[in-house]
Length: 307
Ligand code: GFB
Image 1: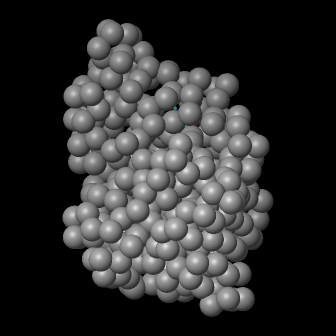
Image 2 (image 1 turned 135 degrees about the horizontal axis):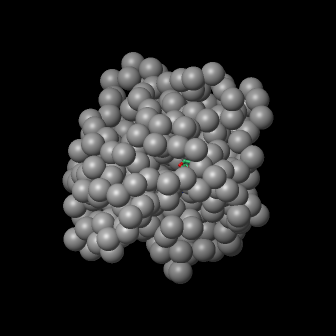
């Protein structure tokens, strides 16, 4: 990629897309094309085709998706499957037809089987049943990986698939019904501290383990891979370490400075017991995450508390 190449970042207002736009800006890229969902509904095939014919981007980061935490995935099952299939089908087809030089498709670690061996190697894709709560989202993302590969095999398109682990960072979603665990707990502990509540309730048993990557690290990895990686299949992006939800809660509690108790709402699902990425392929290419979880959360909390 050259700094004057036209780059379309789909989903630029989301946590991932906005981090990629920041990264490209830092690297001197000056020809970045974006559209809000109000300006361009990526589920509308004709609108997407027209946009690509008009703009002719050379590179595409496909970070637009309907995303959310465990309850949003489980409650809006049709939206998570339909919207994501439509978005990725339309963007990839238009990228193929308009001869995009390279496209990066972003997925998620929930594409792996619920009970896959840990850490999760790229080879474990489609070797077992998925976690029920996020099956629609995972099916859409698996279809996206396969569509990248099919466009590569049939038409020679350089479409690559990148699978990040659970993410956190600026521009996250703090809506308690739809968000992921990390922003949800930050908000819950913060509000409990401000309002003097005696306890904070977390969902499920607290025993599931998750791996958390700062979105600035992900954007750095995406930039790295866009320049050096041109393979079919998928590549994991993570830090290679995980933590239980209970320990995450204790860490956020400490960073926020809350002194009350932690209770559990056992009516809420735990989801996958563990999702730890094997990041050896990415590390062998020469990339490693830099932001430690404690510092990353502390920085995000500083911004959150200000707002
Ligand atoms: O982050 P999260 O919603 O998503 O939940 P997943 C992770 C774990 O934290 C689950 C627990 O075991 C939750 O039950 N948890 C505890 C909470 N308290 C809370 C809370 O207040 N809010 C939330 N949201 N969780 C999603 C998938 O899975 O993660 C997606 O559904 C996607 O498909 C995404 O892959 C990265 O890690 O379970």
